[in-house]
Length: 222
Image (tube, rainbow, N blue to C red; front, top):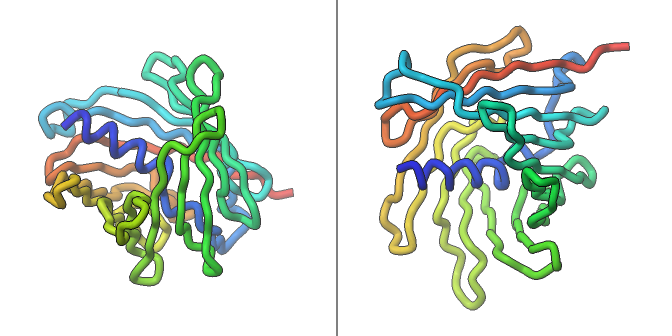
C-alpha cells in the first residue's frame, strides 16, 4: 500500500488537471504562496496522525504556480518542481532533487480547448524516458491517462475525477493486466471565505490514509 501511495503522489504532481487556465472570479483569489501540510494516518484513525511532509507552492504575478518544493517533516528539501507556462498552460516541469540537481523534465502539450493531451518525460541528456496520453470527458471533469505505446491503441490505466474547482475527487488505477490496482478518494472539510479548501482527507479503498491542511497567502491588491 505504501508503494501505491508513493506512485499516486508522483501522478498527482505531474498530471494534475490544474494545468488548465483558472477561471478566477476576483483578483483577491490570486495566490501568492500556499503551504500544504501532509499528515500520515495510522490504521485509518484521524486522531492518530503525524506530520509526514509539507509542500510550499510559489506563484508568479499572474497567479500561476511557478514552483512546488517538497520538504520532509524536519525541513529537509526532497524535491522541487519548477514550471514554465505558455499562454497560461503549464508546458514544462523541471524536476530538481534535494541536491539542487535537475534529474529530468516533463513537456506537456494541449489541444485547442487548453486540455492537456500529452505529457512526455526526458532525462537531463534530453533522452525520452516515458510518455502519457490524456483524454477528457464530462466537460473536463474526467481525465483518462494511459502510456504512449507505439502501434497500440490508447488504453487508460488511470482515471481522475475533478470537482468544479479542478481539485481531485477520485483516482482509480489499473495494473498492466487491467485489474483494479486501487482507488483514492478525497473529502473536503474546510474552506476559506474565497471558497478555497483548507483541509481535506484522502482515502485509499475507503480507509483514511492522509489529512492535508492548506495555508493560503493571497496577492495583495494595489
